[in-house]
Image 1 (cartoon, rainbow, N blue to C red):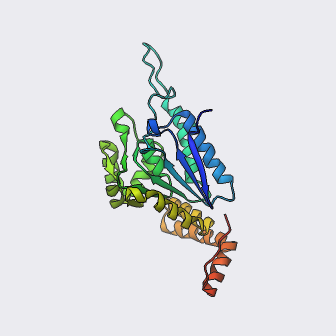
Image 2: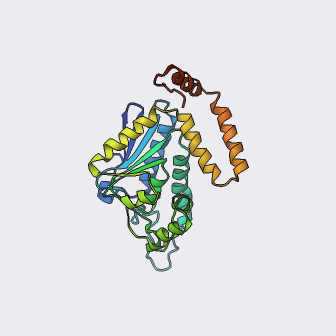
Image 3: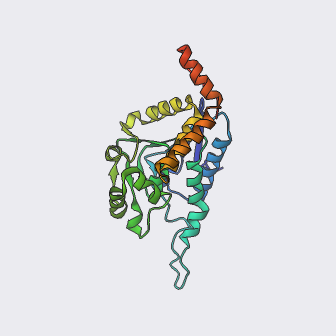
Length: 267
């Protein structure tokens, strides 16, 4: 029986999903897409899961699309029709991005090595990105005549501004993790030996926090990118109205007044 392409493990309320094609630098195939999306759906549906960690096996996080995959490999037969990459995006990448950006729990990317092309943007789709010092981020699309996908055209300008985003995308240069953290592309760069421990500690901390409030914060900040200030204020008011009726709000206030640690249970 073939080994799973996504390894799933649990530690308390944290579920870790590890891409498992190390010999191919965890590059995407249609099969990997299917297993990763299924693993994310399972985590989203499991009330015991309060945070997800996404990482890679071996020396890479994810090298992007496997160009040998029949779904994308150009047919060199004379007269053969070109592959319709828009269908690959619609069938595989768009659902993956949509699932990641709408997870009902926080998602932490622990980038353990190179994150290139779709792999870089897969990491950036997560809520918090922690990267090993030896890791790097590469928008490799321009080197094969394509545009950034997997949400890259939406994510990059919002994370680092339009001028820097365009330079990163056009040039396709390797961006070391330390520089990625300095310019605000990712949350944190840590020593290689500390990555797993730091990601686990961060995920455990998030798992103990009020999950609904964390997810609503993500949603509010995403929405605010398209809104004027009065509309953003109205969105904040709507969310506060919803969260103010939650068990976690009552628990948080009671714990604050009692000077004890809160125990949040909503999801």
